[in-house]
Image (cartoon, rainbow, N blue to C red; front, top):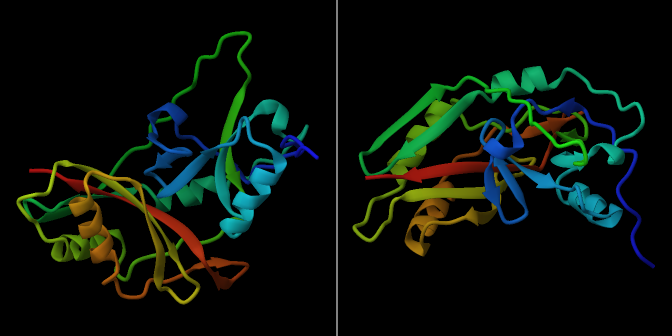
Length: 221
């Protein structure tokens, strides 16, 4: 029996970030504003969607066609709080042994679509919840990575994107290279993350939960 198409989706927020400005991954895009993967679900089936929800504590960001939406889907203003908290982007420069955290304004762009193209909606599905946080915040996390990623002459310039789970106990697990540069760069970034102290876990309905998280690590001479 074939799976049903995705339908009657209700979003908790509409994403203000342009899909085309996000970095491409194997099965979606990387959103640097919230450190999450945004899944392209425009051609996915219901069983694929439910599997993703189950794997991500019922909380994902996705790209949908307008016809996949509920006829009058409520869009909550919760993204404003989420976005303001996520506007600090981390950049790591391990070659120069510098770390920085800088405010980055959000660029809101409108996609121009042809008359026959389907209308696309990007947003979050699932209950709003506080995201996990490294002790001391983003600047402290950048400093931690810079201290623990050690340069070798065989490293290449590039940007490694790593996903991992911050468990309900604040422990980092399930490390995965979403986009790599070289085995040496990739392993250096993962090994540094494995040294991380416990994070403040994300919460759902006031209780700690496992949360998927994603970060970029920039290697540049």
